[in-house]
Amino acid sequence: MKLPEGNAVVYCEGAFNTPNGKTAHGLVRFTKRYNVIAVIDKKYSGKDAGKTLDNKPNGIRICSNLDTAIKLASRQKLKLSHFVIGIAPDGGRLSSTARDDVKYAITKGLNIDSGLHDFLSEDESIVKLAKEYKVQIRDIRKPLTRDKLHFFEGKIEKVNSFKIALLGTDSAVGKRTTAWVLVNGLHKSKIKAELIGTGQTAWMQGAKYSIVLDSIVNDFVSGEIEHAVYQAWKNEKPEVIVIEGQGSLMNPAYPGGFEILAAGRPDAIILQHAPARKEYDGFPGYPLHPLAHQIKVMEDLSGKPVIAIAINHEDIPYEKIDSICETMEAVIGLPVVDVLTQGEKRLVELIKSKLKRK
Image 1 (cartoon, one colour):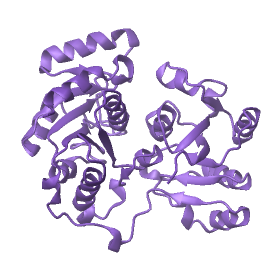
Image 2 (tube, rainbow, N blue to C red; image 1 turned 180 degrees about the vertical axis):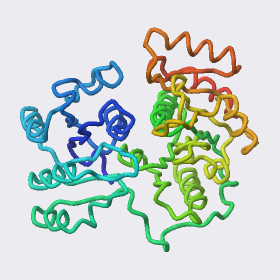
Image 3 (cartoon, helix red, strand yellow; image 1 turned 120 degrees about the vertical axis):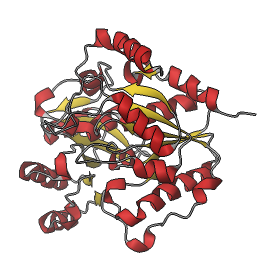
Image 4 (cartoon, rainbow, N blue to C red; image 1 turned 120 degrees about the horizontal axis):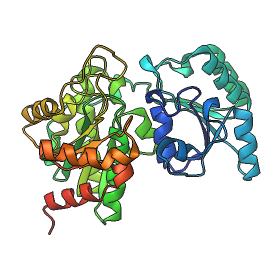
């Protein structure tokens, strides 16, 4: 499929710059699938999305509603083609207000892309409206039929690329963002690298080899991970394959990562962590397991090393990020990097040192 597919407005009403806006955040930071023109969230109306999110202006305007976004695109002599759901609420369900906003977008001739568990293509009123206005609805999380899924075969053992699992100590902690930054950084260093996307947002960002892990029937999860990694290796022959993690090993609601360790067979792990976070995402009273404990569990399970920590700087003042990284590094004895503020160079150099290059 030729990318970008078109000009998109990302719907993130009430969730931008919060953990529930992580899909919008990913698209604001990077996407090959769309040319993102605007984000919708009244709270930050008129602000630059990149500046609001990362203190890095990127020219993507936050608008109060779709009509404003359409006018903005028109002033740039552009026509919007996609209305992308950028919110990721707990349970993946769309509110009635948001559903009305989707219907309004359809009447404006926009194709709808949604990564929620709440499948819009099964809503009779939305489907009827989409047919009337001749637009497409894509539910990215809608599972494939069983005949298109794969069992684990063991073909992962043929893959001789250096495989990195980008796992996390919690959900919504920045795994995918760091994975993309790392892959793009490797490309800049003339190292052929491929990202294996494991969630709906990575697909929306244009990951060529993608699965949506949390929509796959359990018996096929390992096989789908193996198949995606194998196909990326077979078709692209990259030196490095980075596998995006999902959830965390010990998050009570979103346990994830074990299948990636078991079926993806990584050579090394980079662990994403939010130092200021004390409890698991969305679950007060469930304290986050200590970082050292999580490192040990991952290494015991996989038999492979955690080679670096990538941090999420939420709730950390910018002026303290460097000192916190230095303190953590001294305590755990591993490189600690915030790729959004410090760049990816240290991680790229670390990976280069691990490669058996001719």
